[in-house]
Image 1 (tube, rainbow, N blue to C red):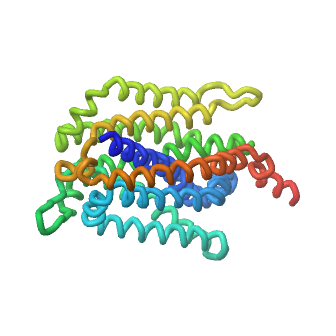
Image 2: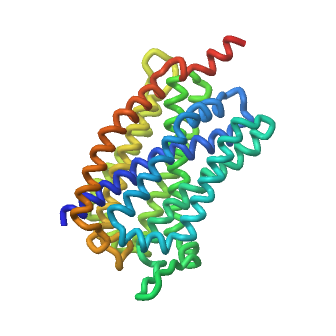
Image 3: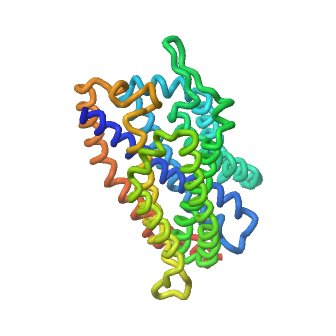
Amino acid sequence: MLDAYLAVTILWGFVFIYAVMATMDFGAGFWSMFYINRKKTGATNIANRYLSPTWEVTNTFIVALVVAVYSLFPKGAYTLGTILLIPGSLILLLLAIRSAFLVFSNIVQEYRKPLTIISGISGIIIPGLLISVLPITHGNFVQITETKQTLDLAGLFTSPNEYAFFGFAITSTLFLSSLLLADYSKASAEYEAYRVYRRDALWIGPISLVMAFFIMFTLKTEDAWIYKKMIDDLPLLFLSLALFVLGGIGLFLPSPGISIKGRPRLSVIAITAQYLAASYVYGKAHLPYIVYPEVTIHDAFTDPNSFRAIFITYIVAFAILFPGFVYFWSLFMNDKRYLRQGKLSGSKK
C-alpha cells in the first residue's frame, strides 16, 4: 500500500518540523528564565526577542500534527488517544500553563520573574513528555484486548529507556536552542550574549550525544526489534554522528570580519540535518507499526479515496502557507531594525 507509506511520510514530516521548532521555542523559554538575573549579558533579552514572534507560530504545527493523525490514520488515532489520555492531558495542561504565563510575563511587569520561571520550567518539561510517546509506541507498556486498551504508567516510568528518551529530549532542546540563540545573538551584534550561548552549546552538545547513545543501549535491552532494524541503517547513523561533529567544528571556525570564534548558522544547519538523519533511521525502523505489535499503518490507514482528497488538501495548504513561513523567517532573521532593536533602544536612552 503505497498510499499508507506516503501518508506516514506526511505525518513524519509534521512530527519533525514541530520537533525542531518546538525544541527551539521551549529552549528559548528556559534560557530566558535561566538568565533573567544576568542583565549584562543581554541573554534574556535575546531569548525574549526570539520568543516574541515565534511561539504562536510553533503551536500551529501541533494542531496540524493532531489533525494529520486523525485524518490519515483514524484507527490508530483511537488507540493513541486511549493510551495517551493521561500523558496527553498532562502535556496539554503544561502547554496551557506555559503559554498563559509567557503572555502574562510580558504584561504584568511586577510579577515578571515568577511568571517567567513558571513558563520556563513547564516549557522544559514538555519536550520530555512529548518524546515519551515514542517508548510507549514500542509496545512494552500497552495492553490491548478486545474490550479495552490500557497504558502501564508504573512500568513506563520505571523503564531506563523512558528516562533515556526523556533526558535526550531535554538536552537536545537546550542544545539546539542555544545554537539558534547564538546565531540570533551574532546576527543582532549582541556579542556578549553570543559568547554565553556558544559556551552553553559547547557543553550541552556532548551531553545530548551521550543521551543518544544511552537510548541505543536501552533499546538494545528493552526493544531489540527496533534496535536491530536501526543498526541495518548504520551508515546513516554514522552520517548523523559526522554531522554532529561538523556542528561542533562550526563553533570554532573563524568569523569573517569580526574577532570572535564560531559560525553558529553552519552549526544550526548541521545539527538540524543530524536530527533529520537520525529521526529517519528511527522512523524507518519503527515501520510498519504505529503501536508495536498490534497497530500497523496498514490496519489504521484511512479509506484510500479519503486519503487522496486529504492529500490534495495538504498540497494546496502547503503551497499557500510555506511561502508565508519562509517570508516570516527571512524577516525575523534578516531584518536589521528588529535584530538590533535592543541596541537602538539603548542608544535612544
